[in-house]
Image (cartoon, rainbow, N blue to C red; front, side, top):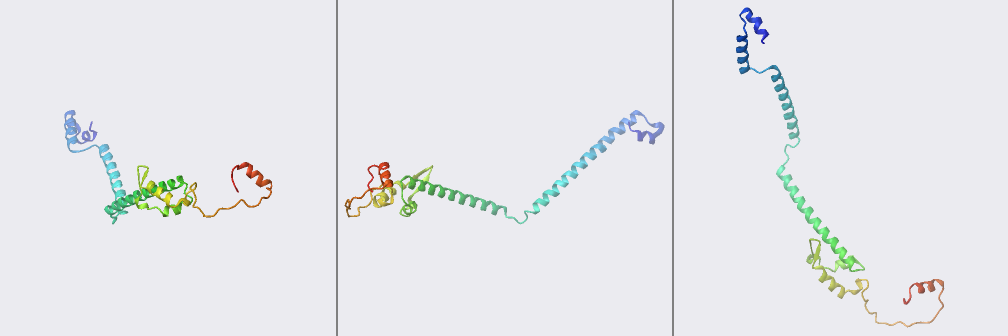
Length: 176
């Protein structure tokens, strides 16, 4: 019921007038509660817009396309470096597995440009390792060493002390 209308119209006020005025007010006006709710939404939206504008100002002048390209380039470099590191580690493991006495020296004698690493497997290394083992047997433990050309005699006899005797017992067949 519209009490304010009753005070204006006085005795001329009827329920029918109240109903018609209420319908017409509903067409052109909104309730105070709805207005206050929309007003609060508007304040929140304006606050959000302001904070987003402030955040955008921090990135003014930044070349986004350039940054994306830089990220792509860095990702490519990372992938390339990681592949090279994996290949180098696989080569080092292969040299260690072949009992190279000096992995650095053996590595220097290899043509690493011909060695590829893919799916956890090296290719092009085994042939080079075979040739390296043949040409430089001194570089690998367990390989026959190069002949020095001389033979050494047995020499004179002498008595063994306790340490030499214990060593001889622990290492039978080893000539000192």
